[in-house]
Amino acid sequence: MSRTVSLVLVDPAGVLLGQLPPFIVEVPWWQEVAGVVAGAGIDVTVLRLLHGDQAMPPGGHVTYLAMTDEKPAGLLPVDVDLSPHPLRASYAEPAGAAASLAWAAGALDRIGLSGLTARQQRTWNLSAIWRFDGPDGVPAAWLKQVPSFFAHEAAVLRLVDGVAPGLTPYVLAAGDEGRALIAHVPGEDRYGAPPAFRAEVLAALQPVQEHFAGRVHELRAAGIPTLSLEGLPHIAAPHIAGIPGLRELLDDLPRRLAAVDECGLPDTLVHGDLHMGNVIHDGESFTIVDWGDAAIGNPAFDAVRMPGEPEVLTAWAELWPGHDALRAAQLLQPVELLRQAVVYDTFMARIEPSEWPYHADDVRRCLQTAVDLAGQ
View: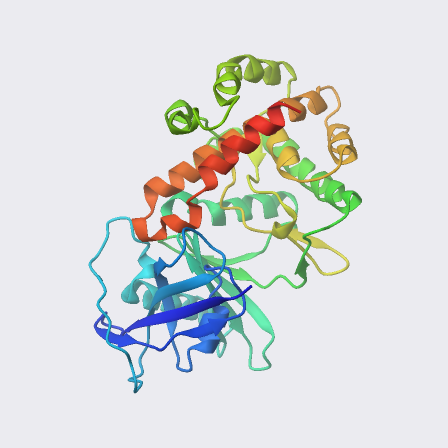
């Protein structure tokens, strides 16, 4: 699968220039823009999604807004609304993207890493990411900028690094508007990792969670939010008729959560999105990345987010002696999907409508999966 891409171009002042002829990008995922930049034929910075010809990614024909200093010939005329939107990320505007790259270049200079080349990797409503390569093409650092609801990520990375050095990427610098400059982590993601490796990741995280179980005040002081199901009845209401069993699951939720409390696990730091795509392994050691969803909550939420066979949960539960951790994880499996539905609904409320296709079916999907898990 691939996607067809059209780029609407503006100059650094935001003045509309026109549209490039469509071209093919092999990677179908809309937020991945390295192939878009490479295929444009000119130097561009992709700013944001304008629209797609289908309800959601991947694939299809996708139109982005991009910034360029060049004046390419052969641009197509285009009629597009470039008016501001109050929920637009700063990095999705020409001035904001330029300011972020300038901030990163200055931070790199101050720590003696000058002469690096910025290569844009991703941009969407949840992050903008650039990789900085040395003259030899070897990655040295990454600029990650996130919206305000993920702005605590740099603080989380530093807190975890203070307890378990190397378990998270090292923060070289942190700035305003959600900017963070992060040292490069060598290796590849571990999608498809075997159960033993997944259990190893959970075991590496457990001492961090045990440490912060008695220091929740430090997490709050760093701006880390608490996991919440607030608003769930309102979010679920439009889907009750179409998802048999959802009403019963919601009615039973107070009993289920009370039973989780009886299992005795403490509130602590939760990664919030602990799947194997967020684990980078270089063959010897691994690093857990992408902590934007980090929150205060029951550590079993991370255990059930990690896909795996029953032995993975059993091994994780043994790390919490004196608690009925396995039962807590079993009870929270559908609750984790209800929580994700709340998270995705929050995303939709905080991003401009042109970005909604990224999450168009996420709330319904999470609610359906929660019901399926509760019935197992």
